[in-house]
Length: 388
Image (cartoon, rainbow, N blue to C red; front, side):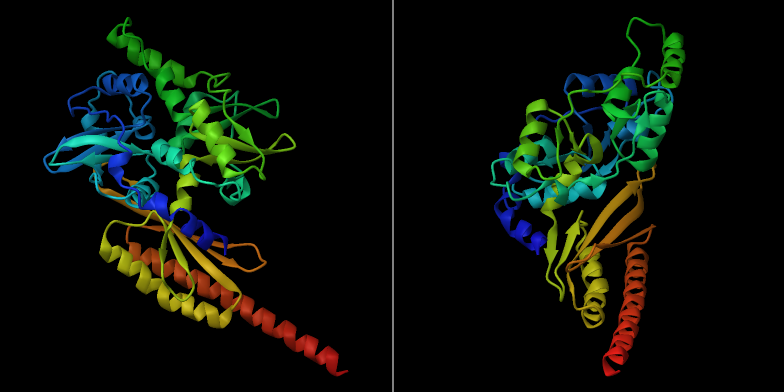
């Protein structure tokens, strides 16, 4: 059970206090223009920005800002949404839960109602790189068959893919080969108008830029690895090149991509159930944690009776944003790993977490019940053959 081994391996990392991983935080005001915020993000090589509103923290990030219509006039206020924060004595595990749950790269640190810093995904990767991870291979963590774009497509197509799929990296194909990787930061920086332009020309220029071809926009300094390369090598490549992804190739063919999020998934929370259950993006609300446990406790017990070869299950919980400062839909996937078989993967989306979990449980039991019946019929036929 490789997941269980990984869980124990990273115990010390997950228990590390946040106060040892503080990075500079980028603060904004609701009245700032989007253009001003983009300048701050670019200047500080950041992804997320924050604002303290009473006892709550509001945030936005590069991917959300891609939706802006007029970056020179619009205020950042309409893109700010509530975000969970941590305190200096909280653990890396809690930070990893927030990062994966909301698909962001930084969690603010609050002390005495003041934002004192941020814990970034990059700082956690630096901590992970100090471990002996040579036995963890790329094929255990990478996202297979990543979405790609052609260099002949307009930037507007890339922006639409990133905002709808909630991703930040698009490998760019040119004459059948990957030439570079386009990120959400590249698009935001490219469409940012120069200060020397007039206000009217700025808006027009932005629209024209979005309709221009992707061409060679993006980074060619993206590290690359093979499926058999180890995590230490991957982390070293990403940290040295200061990039947020690594391409996985085999014989010059793109197999997948590894991002911050894929690596942070290794810090899943383990719930003690009849079959080990790991949660990626664990909700902060204890009521939801109890809901997850209760929904799958009975399901996993039934699975053991139907399909005894199952040795672990993983649930990944991500929550979308509606753009109205409200919580959006839950996007939940369930992966069940039988011994010596390909993982079984199911997905469900909805506003009510309880209904989403119930739907996943039903899909899983239905699918595995069919497998059990099929296996039973096969065994009966074999018994008939042996009796002849």
